[in-house]
Image 1: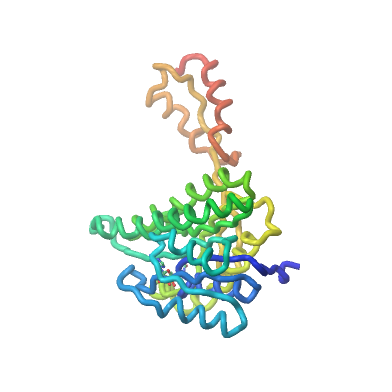
Image 2: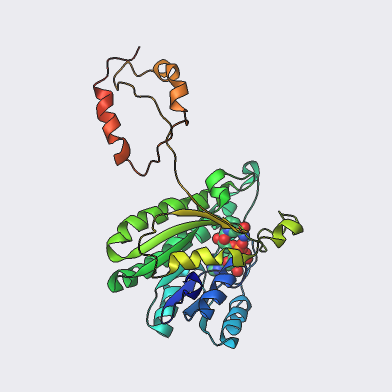
Amino acid sequence: MGDQLRFDGQTVVVTGAGGGLGKAYATFFGSRGANIVVNDLGGSFKGEGKSTKAADVVVDEIKSKGGKAVANYDSVENGDAIIETAIKNFGRIDVLINNAGILRDVSFKNMTDADWDLIMKVHVKGAYKCARAAWPHFRKQKYGRLISTASAAGLFGSFGQCNYSAAKLSQVGFTETLAKEGAKYNILCNTIAPIAASRMTSTVMPPDVLENLKPDWVVPLVAVLAHSSNTSETGGIFEVGGGHVAKLRWERAKGALLRADDSLTPGAILSKWENVRDFSQPEHASGVADFLDLLEQAQKLPRNP
Ligand code: NAD
């Protein structure tokens, strides 16, 4: 049944669709009946230069197979223009895949403001601007599917990538909040942390590993999340690549409950340090509300020893 997932009449905007994962999404959705906006700035993986070629090649490929696609060459920082391309050409937007990205890898010791700022501009501001421009359309039509792109680097840290890690984890908080704000309007928002062979990973992984990490193996999960048959999966984080698909979530340790008064000293915390970091019976925290009860209980405790 999943093999039949189609997107006829819908418009899918894919940012950074000139290569790698974005190209795989665009060609897939194009082959399943959707109108595609193929956005790509066409620069290097470090964010230098620009060209219309990357987007044009993908548009031609989709059209040559009978699909419908238009190119957009703006940087994602100019999200308004990208979404406008969808509205002008197809009259609507149903799915936004925030995928565009670059790297400026350098150890923290050598990080410059320029390395930091460019990564934030493309990943954080770019994702915001595209989603912000799509949002009124999603709300008005009471339908929208947003896919954000995080990374293992953001979830777990990665040597030499502190700018990229910070930008990528930001996608999680951003998307979880949009999931909450969008729920009432049937706007479902999820984050993926993909792994795939692309120009971004070609220098950091051996060829035999890359061989098993085709971008095509990330696409099906994105299709499932972006399809109208997904009516409830929102605010999720998914690891995906090379045949592995798994949802991730936060875990809260057993923790220490301490009375919150002047007896709450460093020593009081140290006396319960094992509990603070005891994950033997984890809770799966999903918000502040989960521990408001605990705060009340803490007030009823005797002074800390
Ligand atoms: P890629 O370099 O092949 O694709 C990224 C595309 O984004 C390029 O075509 C590039 O021209 C475009 N782009 C860059 N800056 C842009 C801008 N300002 N405006 C519009 N387009 C722009 O890399 P990829 O591996 O396909 O990466 C796609 C996304 O997945 C990125 O967000 C990346 O951070 C993320 N990601 C990839 C991996 C992986 O294993 N490949 C892992 C984790 C996260």
